[in-house]
Length: 117
Image 1 (cartoon, rainbow, N blue to C red):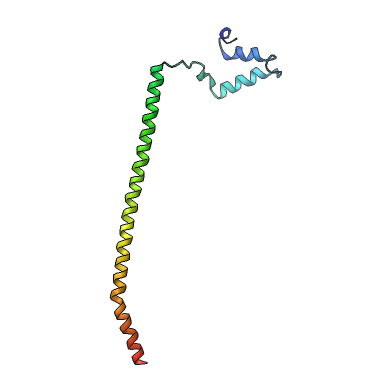
Image 2 (cartoon, rainbow, N blue to C red; image 1 turned 180 degrees about the vertical axis):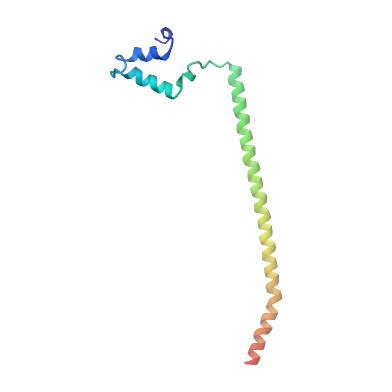
């Protein structure tokens, strides 16, 4: 049947009454083909082994590039995290130092209060 048709409308007309009992089958199928522009797949040619190999290489390169981008983003995140961690450590050390400096004055203040009482 495929070799005897010149377009899809002939093929769908052939199927009406044979494949489908709906008398409007060919009209419905033809409308779907038109709406979704399915005729663009009619002229697909068989690819040569070289074309298939080239497409495979391109797909692999694309995958490698995507992985490189993911790694770069992870590295950026790691650097940001490391800097933030260092900042927090420095801030903690600063707070601990402030507490050490302020501790004697707090102790003396409490001692003075007790003496005054």
